[in-house]
Image 1: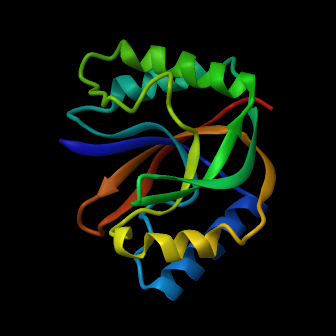
Image 2 (image 1 turned 90 degrees about the vertical axis):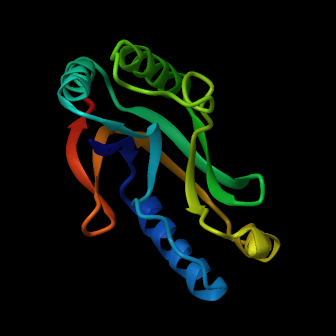
Length: 178
């Protein structure tokens, strides 16, 4: 079986800011970065024999869908082990995610966890691996950085995990209409 994750990759100034801040935090606090570039997770990592149905569903889904606005504003965290940039999705972005989730739910071999689905928390992770002992220091450092970007969910990207290189790679990127 192969391992995949479905995301929307973010580009532009927000990506440069994210990459710079991740590097700064990792260097300063001696923590490891995540293995994915700046993204919004649409479907958490999963294993499946064949990605064909997911690919066909996604290709059909994006045909008549438009990019949706989001704002990247402030920081937040999950417990003491994930620090992220907070995403404020537009009504259209929420609807897009809900409709895509409902399409994917029709795929029999796709497994779902409790924190996925319609109530997903839109975010872009900064650090999340083994940070609990340094959480307070990292958090106090990060919240001093001002952040505000207007961006968009403009693609749905299937990433495949390369076990030999120990990294996520783009399998296929589907663009939403402008």
